[in-house]
Length: 201
Image (cartoon, rainbow, N blue to C red; front, side, top):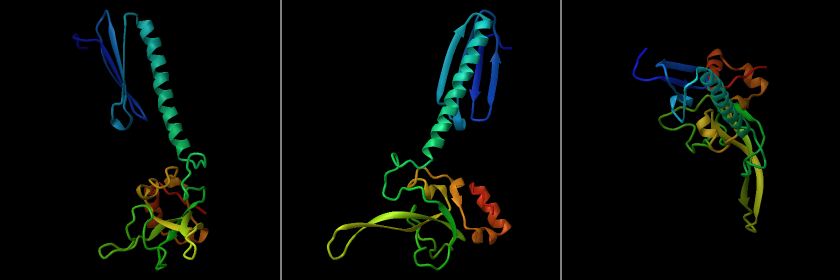
């Protein structure tokens, strides 16, 4: 062990703890750094003389780090569930996100999220897209009064296209009609699973 310093570095991620210990009698410095996604974000520093106190403090510190981590995870889970008191845009609702096969339907022309066409001169249409029934506003041509209606809007099967508009969305929320699922090829299933979409009859 190095004799220059007495340090216990405890790095935490979502899945594991990594310990690096250097010991020197008389004192011990404890640095606990919480690093979700490998990015340091919090540093704890304690100094003690008694090994017994150190063990107790480490246990308490672990409990605090874990509590902090899991409370943050729960906040994310709660935030990804539709809540009418929080998600109040006209197009926010708890309607299902449904996997649909992209076809020549003129309504399936543009992703409502990234605003790009599904088919361009340099890209082919995606095989599957996501449909979501949403309310929208429009002005009556005769009176100019504002009315609302609802129809399906379409998105790329990509979280980056859907979540900015629907912050409560998760890829695991995507469902599909039985007829669509039965027509999926093994390669389709593998691709969807890689995106976090798991469908079954």
